[in-house]
Image (cartoon, rainbow, N blue to C red):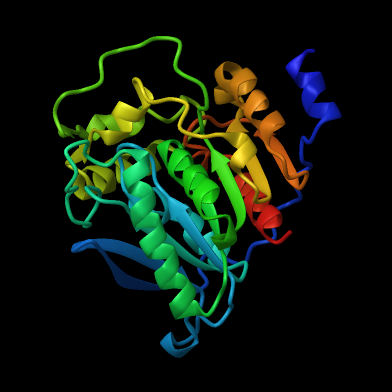
Length: 307
């Protein structure tokens, strides 16, 4: 069946117009630290609040999980114009957090020789979720995983179904790649500033934003663990869709859908919860949260999380 027809017959969501407040509205940032097995992990928060005393009052918690190269804050809380996805959802009434798993951002370096594969990153996520459950007085949190972070988020949802309310996976990949490069032997790789341009589609982004993003990304992550590459270059599939019980939304940008549609439709078909959506957004690619359709991405994610 033609994939376009599959989407029409299946669950292509109609995305409403974004219902967001003025991006200049105040959003409070707060640094949290989580400890797991002696490692200190960064958990960054953005919550809309008039005063610090009201932070955490919503009872609605969403946790963003980053990809293989750049940590959470450059991607989800970019302080350039209205590009912060965390601020956008905070304006919608959410307490938003992003976790830097081991080896990324300002979190401690990995202990394991395999340098933070998804199965190890899940332990970091579990520590963060348990911290949020206790601090915010909730039973479950919502997870948004991007790229390799979708592997981590999905695996956590498999292993801890009672802690995940809703799950959003975007820029994901399920089955093995069509090529098989050797997995890197080194535990870390050095990053270059120009690498921040790689996930963006020409014509779909603001050049001024990309320059700002590249500076923020390389400052946060001059190097990255190679565990994610070990997953991709010989460890896929990480996930079993039949084991993910939470309501789940898959999102692809138009340009990425051209290469990942078949893979993600197969994954989508295996999800057992019928509260599920597959959304393709026009005009963006792998890093759609930083591209021109970002407001439609915020709206799709926010509407799904609100159930």
